[in-house]
Length: 233
Image 1: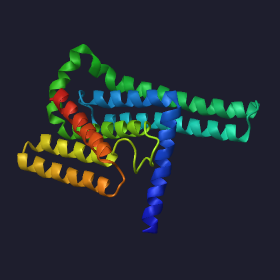
Image 2 (image 1 turned 180 degrees about the vertical axis):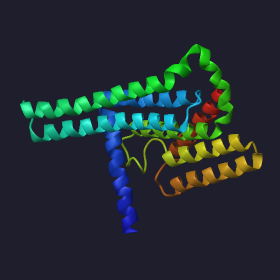
Image 3 (image 1 turned 90 degrees about the horizontal axis):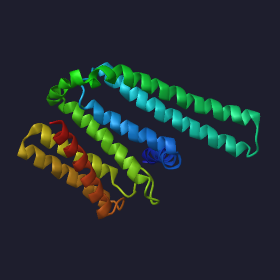
Image 4 (image 1 turned 180 degrees about the horizontal axis):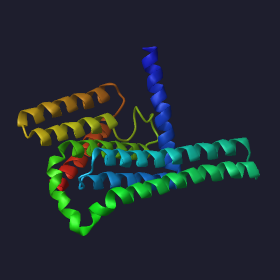
């Protein structure tokens, strides 16, 4: 039990860092918005597995660089508040790392998307009907990004437990909605939503979230997946 508790605390601390960066850094907000846009765009393109990996890696690299940049800036500010050539070098190098990662992402985007965004190749849209799994994965990732962004609006609780939106409810209802669309079977869809309701109930019974927060999460998960499937198909 102690190990499980420590593991939860470790996740809390890590997500606290992500949320702080998203709250305090304007560039991180831009990175998140671009990440959601790019992930949504991949739904309309017949990307290979390697290309999808390259996109995910580029997004992760930019976000990680911004987080390391923030960490270095705060560390330097903790050590000294006065001007120092060494402090300037540390901050400049950290900012340079963000720039390099951003340039890398632009190059990857050019190589992956340019030909496919050419008007003569937009016929690739019709191939999206074979991308059920891809739609589901992208939908889940976008749902989680919205959950993280939503938790920045809440001053209460930790970022794994509590917050203005229930991440567990959002994820469970997103999965249930995806299963319903993919299976096209009323019984399977009903059983999936029953499981999602049990997850939501557990968050309320455990007093981790209020009924309103669980409802917000459920609506978010359903809307994101439904929007993606309706737009794509």
